[in-house]
Image 1 (cartoon, each protein chain N blue to C red):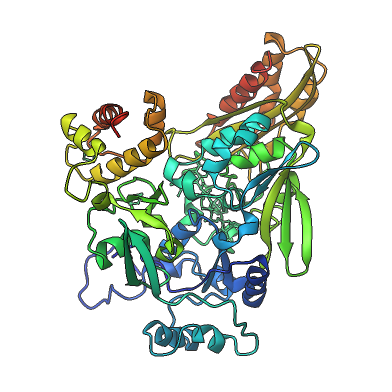
Image 2 (image 1 turned 30 degrees about the vertical axis):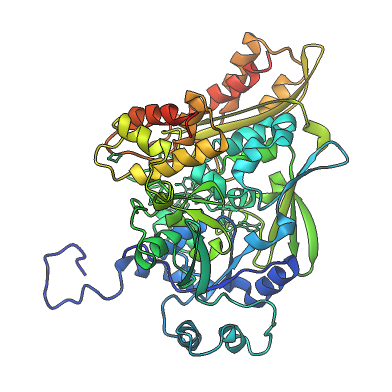
Length: 330
Length: 227
Ligand SMILES: Cc1cc2nc3c(=O)[nH]c(=O)nc-3n(C[C@H](O)[C@H](O)[C@H](O)COP(=O)(O)OP(=O)(O)OC[C@H]3O[C@@H](n4cnc5c(N)ncnc54)[C@H](O)[C@@H]3O)c2cc1C
Ligand code: SF4
Ligand code: FES
Ligand code: FES
């Protein structure tokens, strides 16, 4: 049969301590499996063939959603996307994230795929995933950025040799909501802001996040600051199921007396990391959301974009999504 | 070498697939040695065939750091499939779809894409619909699995979804049907009276090459309330 995965050792630790020990023992040879929806494809293609798999699904500590003292939420890394999309707490406080989780892939994938895995997933550049020895794979060329390459899904901004984009739907929501990622390894725990969690290729071209071998993302903290604020999420993809975003947008905003007092807005699938639209944020703060403001937003949202051969369509798409996000405040 | 040249009987085409040659750098960077018969793989092979006690693979491959409580899984796994306890001997890299079809003979579960992209392999695990092609068998230890074979009543009475799919002429070629049935049963177990939109959403993870979506949707709506 085709698509048989390579031979590996599978560990199913029941506690964090065991999992961390295992990861520490096996270092770079170990691969964490959460829902496995990103991982198993790598193995079936034999592009990644780690000898040791650590299945973290048995660790109770990584599950579940709970309220925090500041009115925010704690989401365990193993919480499934379906649980997030359907949770009363998340839909009430952080609808942008609930919406984003509900727009990932398909129902069966959301039933198993986890928040941690969705945030930590690798890019979907098909050259890279097919095993081409590109920059990201440790080689010395990019197959997506050539005159004849197919790069409809690739970057508009901040490409540095690699033009692959962040594929995650939950990532821009995490950035807009100022989420904090809590990471643990054998040496202790650290908290990283969502914006710093994602790594751009000019810093390290071979990875998408700050996670090092031995690290487990244990959960995501959503601060109370944005709980219950006006939020927006929208994703445009070729099909509404399975397909990754061509562009998605997430926004959190506060209104006072009809004016926007504070806002954060981020787009996915336009650069390697979720892109915060700081120009849009600066533009709309203090303003009343109306048609004139929308027009201005559309003008600045994707300015500076450097499209490749086949992805010019993303420029107006991104502008329109930003515009629609701001329109939702009117 | 001309990769796409005419067939040459002197060439051994079955050796390494070309794709493996493409990323030597990446492999070296991580020290991953896929499919080589290294000492460790050889030892594991022995463990897997059950000659050496379970867990010995871990002890052997890490003689200095062996920890008793964190062992690699051994091959035997006990699953509950359609209400019956089944012991299977499955390697860690086996998917549930493979185990169901080729070890338990439950060939009602289909493999379409083997990539979590079509839904033909949909089964329920603890009541939740999942793609069995993209789930490791060892992940399902202790879970209640229901496949298409377990949907009808023991006396053979069809599940309301099955009956409604017949009434509405749901299947055309029928290849996607087992997955469609299981997805619909999972929905109705959770939400006995879904709206059309809820049903469409719940069925959206199941492709149908014949395009019989509306028939299936009508079937789900017909079964709703009767399920
Ligand atoms: C057909 C298909 C369509 C898809 N469509 C979309 C889409 O539209 N939008 C979208 O956002 N995604 C999409 N995905 C991706 C999918 O949503 C993600 O792959 C899934 O959410 C990952 O979750 P997981 O738990 O299954 O990850 P896994 O495969 O288990 O893990 C993914 C990666 O994250 C690492 N990891 C996981 N958990 C942790 C942790 N706690 N700590 C440290 N590292 C960790 C793993 O080592 C691995 O490298 C699609 C996938 C498929 C197969
Ligand atoms: S875009 Fe990045 S991942 Fe894709 S081929 Fe180029 S370097 Fe590789
Ligand atoms: S065979 Fe599992 S989703 Fe296609
Ligand atoms: S009936 Fe033929 S694929 Fe659905």
